[in-house]
Image (tube, rainbow, N blue to C red; front, side, top):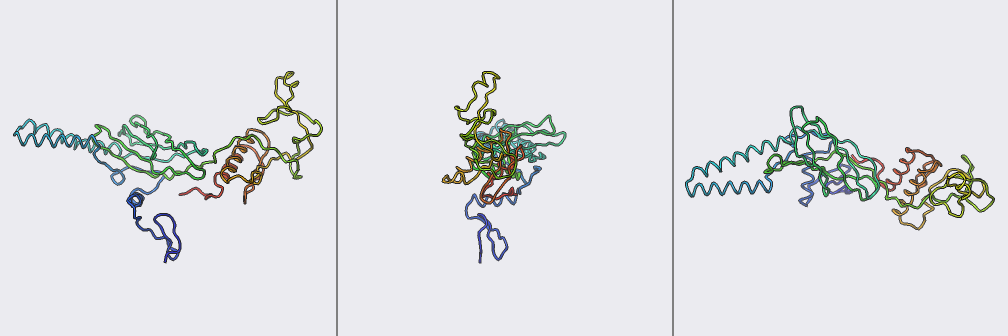
Length: 341
């Protein structure tokens, strides 16, 4: 008896994962394709993973040859027979040229940078050819995206970036990469579907809301600094976006040409915490977007900042590595932390 379901084509039966054939044609095609061309970060094309079929122009060409043969039979015209056989032999030769335009080509994954939700993730792909061979008019693209044209006849290796729009945060898999060609005459189409096992990390869509106000309470740890309040004037600091206009030091700006802000208040912890609980009442994705905007705003300053999520505490810090760690935590909140394989 099945205890649980794992995906569309796998069940767990007595602790063992058992695959079964999906009922839909699309599902059966996907299972067959996974077996025929398994996921790999480096693939060399050969007869086992290349498909070839006449294009629309090819079917029209075959129809023309058939009409010529019928006309030659009807009128007993040897010249028409010769033309029909010449065109048929041209079609047969084109099959080999179209196939060899893909055969022997090596495709490898070249990594992808994290992006924000709504942006295009650019997946790196490396194309390599064997010396003495050439590959012309290659088209690469993800499903639903505009393909890119590549010619590999001079360089032995070429690196391209294939974009795919990421709509949601978390790990993003664009699907199988389609590589096809109709070279040289457009009569046949050779193609393949490749799973290069690449996944892009997608951060939440940021909401620009400036830097959050610091709490006036100190934790007793770390370096102390003056925080905004309404007590005595204690000094000036550089202007940051979102600062109140009434606190601008115009005299200092006229004298030095540098926009400064007057600070008032007592002593508090210099570190800034970006707290999930500070956004109580907002939906989960809205909270993550607001926190993402805060991270980007704080990263533009020199101050240390940390992140508090339910079950996750990242100590205050600064720098690109710290910024990436916070954005990763926001991207994978409530999701699988490890990159899918």
